[in-house]
Length: 631
Image (cartoon, rainbow, N blue to C red; front, side, top):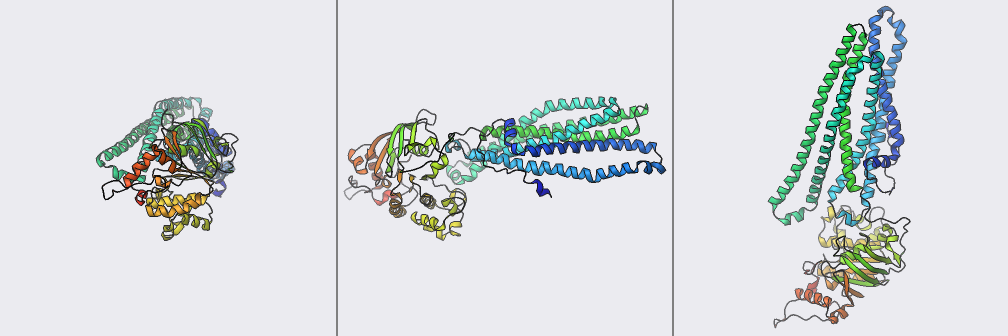
């Protein structure tokens, strides 16, 4: 039966609205699909509270009836009434409570949390690559996870706890006032003290909770960063300093937790004192009224029951208020990160990119990452449809910036980039990236199967996947346990660097996109593997527009044209032979790289490099571990 409450809405709808940035707006807007559930849940909660108060009031009345009535005639006079109350207690009360709990915990809370998380994840996943580079992945993940929890907790606290306790206290006030308005005096004094406690201590709890959330987020970031990059940390040395840094972060998390617990213990201790005062006040005042004949005995019984119940619920309410403020603080902190406006967004009315030939134009493009220097500076570059262009330059010349802007990992600060005459900012990012295949220098894989790392999630043509594997000279896949179904490990750690790069190449070949960006695509391969791939690569590149970024110049010597960048501008352009004859920056880079890989002749002189023949560097120039000129 409870399954009927499970699916009041689909929490994973495709909704790409901007994420609300304030807590109030987020709860109102993002939990909108659950409003009908919330309305019914609030109604059932109020009915449960009213029924509980009525039963306590009836118990007091029953005491008076029993005291005044005769045992031999009591059942005849009150039997039907007692049966009705029994049915109400045995059947209606449990059914109403079950429905209320199911609405609160299954229909609402169990859907509010994934709904909030999904909306946060959808928004964050559409952020630009540059945005992710500004924070720890673990921190972002923790804010998405904890932010969804906080949103559900905040809404649940209101619907399940605050409404119930408020209705219960209001009902208790009504019951006592109906019997004797003087009973409101001790209750009013208690409510005033309770309100003062809430005003003083709850804000302290909220601030302490925010500090704990921040410290826990930093700790999560540390753990994820340390475990994901264990190999890098092992090479950094200075273990004592690293341990000291880790200990400091752990200590901050502990200190924040201790501060929160101190406030919580103070709240609970004060609540116990207030509860005891309410118990003595209500019962004692009720006895005083009974002694003077101003109140019946049933009133004392009802006051006793209500005082115990209100005291326990007051603690529950304060916990709920503290939890609410803590959740609001956590949600507010999460939204500061996850609800940031999209750094790169599709324009309203953006259309899919249609590639006719693949011509690419950079027109007066500047991008300095907001620093005023670095990146690209008023770059003008036209790549003809089907042309293969190599991009070279010193470290920091702007090569990677060029590739990142083409894929809209960032939006250019100035200038325009077009593909076949279409401004890439006017098309959807999804369609843009589906028409451009890229192989990056750092071939990081997902912790998924080799098949998914090549073809992506969902159905894939096995024959096409194996063809891409063969083109990338990745025959080792057939020898892996499970073949294409073998897991690559987190960031591809189960494979060597060369194997990861060949999987990345297979991914690009499988996509069969009309535009191909190669960012040092064979840097992790040894010379033999690179030579084997080059023959296939020439076949794959034929008829496509190619931008190949390289430090190892032998890999781009056969490009149709080579563009040399320096300080974000084009300083040279031409074929490999033309640039060597020109004797400029490219020739110096080529000579430096060739000298670094060539030995000496028998006379102690340098071996000669033929300037007129592309790709004449010796085989040693293909060694992936010897690249003196890196970005």
